[in-house]
Amino acid sequence: MPETQDQPNDSFRFPVEAGHIMMFARALGEDNPCYFDPEHEATRRRGGVIAPPTFVAAGAHFDPDWPYRPRPDEPWFGSGAGPGTAPASSGAGTSLHAEQHYEFHQPLRAGDVLTVSREQGETWEKQSRRAGTLRFSTEISRYHNQDGHLVVTARRVRVITERTVES
Amino acid sequence: MSTKVHDLAVNDSHEAVLVDDLSRTQIAMYAGASGDFNPLHSDEVYATQVAGYPSVIAHGALTMGLTARLVTDWLDEGEVTGFGVRFLRQVWPGDTLTGTATVRATGVEDGRDVVELDLVTVNQKGEQVVAGYARVHGL
Image (cartoon, rainbow over all chains, first blue to last red; front, side, top):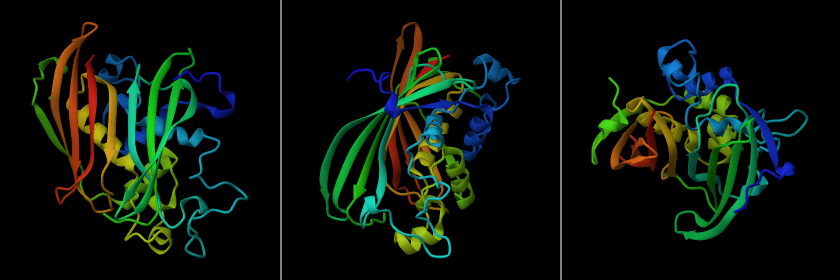
């Protein structure tokens, strides 16, 4: 597949900030000083504060099209006075994360400014006895840093189930 | 107590509890940090009354991030260069997750030690919640 740096319409800027890395690391129960303490010897050995492997998931904050973020003056589908409403896209089932893959081409550091470009990958369907028709879709995201170097390649597979499933 | 990539051999393994009694607060922390505010993960009323689940569901990416810690805590002298999982089962508040990393292959690439790991994370019933792999290079 071609490189996608020339897709301005579907790319966005993702500044990697030290405080954001700290919050993300805390949410994972991390106490590794590499993620928050620039003075620690372990951090110095790595050349400064780095991000945990899955940090690029937090690029959702900067994605202008990210659907799972309430926006001013737009209805939100979660509960308020009422219990909320199912999003139209999912029908009676649920959109679930099926697979996630990352290739890390170089360490991601506090201070990096990433450009995220995405392209849709393959889609397919599968039948499930429990969940009905499963609709899978793949999205490839590439994260280039401020020097134009590819830092991370991510491949996410989502599945939308026809019916709600419990494990 | 750090283990170096260089010292690993095939079938070496490492097990660790990744979270004990997962709290709704930790799921909310992950929602805030990651930006994934899907109410399925953080809104008990929506999750039970609209989506039809017994409670909120932890983000798959939270379980994946916890599973990454299995690797980075074990090989803190390493650099994770590849990491992937399949999400096999939902993770709920109250779950206790334990991860196991097992060395599948070792080698040298461009003068750096490299190891390929198989990863499995299970819940308190022993059911797999994610399974995947990681590749780690020596620093």
